[in-house]
Length: 175
Image (cartoon, rainbow, N blue to C red; front, side):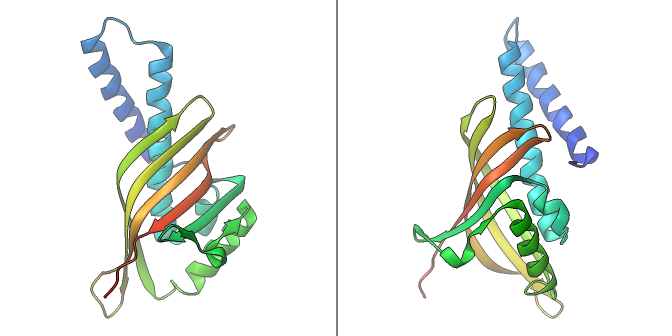
């Protein structure tokens, strides 16, 4: 279940959109209201993505995905096969192994911005958002480990919007 704290923020967000629309139009259609609610719900899941991963909540992180969800990473447009994870159980195992292994001694922060809706209908959506990922160890200042953007495919389930496929398209810098 998504945190009620975040959902309250969504309701405030949707309420502000509704008030704005009501001030500009005599009538807001049910579809326009549903679009606002769906957008707010997707924003919530994206926010939870960062907080759950960065707080090392592996179980909560995996819950943001559909049963057949997948993770993928691309560099310079090329898929990295070793970085592909398919299925919710595999995503949970990946998160646990990452949190208890390579990330055990560091703080991770996923900074998201620039969320764009490419497609949104009643049951599916596609979004993109910029990402800057930092790490910090006990003896270091935060440092950038990756930048790029996420391409997210969404399905609306009985438990709300969930990520069906997440592709991290990382930037490659040459020194």
